[in-house]
Image (tube, rainbow over all chains, first blue to last red; front, top):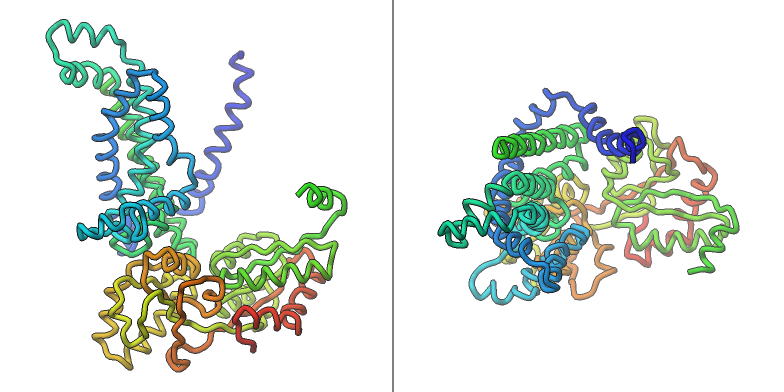
Length: 257
Length: 238
């Protein structure tokens, strides 16, 4: 396709993606968004969102990186089936995912009696928020990281191994640095998805200020009472997510040069 | 299905859009079927949501004909802004304590998990007022203990009920009519002096694309047929 031919559809899609955000930003001044931040309810929700997503994405990276690596090195039918398992939560509507999480960890869920016996209860707690964010964020991390690891040349690893590095050391000193820009993109995608998580959180964790009311839930709540405030918190969420993406992008750019 | 498609394509049908509070889901489902029987060339589309969401949609210029609200204050505000005609009451509802266990209001602090509506939605405000009034009767300790049992403030009455039906909560404060649609949940009536009946009102939008149909719809809701259907779904009548 010539450059000029690609221009129109590309511009159309960009406009479709950017217009709603531009419209949203147009409804609220930065001063109003900052004022919303000083409302105790918003500050509390922002702080909860930052804490829970950091934990969720930390877990996604910790558990997801080895999985992505294994998936990237294998093209067997088994690993394709595993990829499908990873993709499943992405295709479910979030509210349905919340119901599914209750069916797994709720009182009457698969693991409910086991958790209860151990004195644990996930639903309605901050742990449930983290689990919901992990389940929606981790697939994005694993899928993107798998693609990044696929680009790591097997020969590079062989060289490292012949120089005496064990598999773990070859992975950490060769594969991870080579794939770093892709891994950072993966983190950014998963993190922003976790920050925006709404449906599964509401269904699985409920809505209680300070405990489970994250920024998206606070926005939804404000929509019922004060639309201006809802917009201001939404602009705040856009700003936080944009800062996160730009920061990670800068990190990825530095690690690739 | 295919027949429905052909029908839908064959005759140009007028679309009457009714915005309704979520507590009306079943009752307005019945009314929609009845209205369409009597007006075969009309397709009634009822959009259910929290009352404030509906008010927002009206303010944003959503093309609709009638709004039915669970909170007269919201409806009065819309009318004051010139967006709707004066709202008229058409039904009343009552708060109940819904539970899967065996509690009553006095022993509410004994439940493990209580779910209520968020402060932003009418059911949440009615619930807070009811609990405050009950606190006068049972004492400040009772009120404080109830507060510690609240595990979630849900954005709509149906969300609150869902948590109870799913077995994740032990009690919830909902409207009496919400319980008609579910099994396994017991409704404990609340004293009227603590929880006065709540009024549902409806109004025609000033920008209604189908003003005459809107009037016909509201007349049916207020008329004998509407009253009978609303009563059969547990609503009280003004």
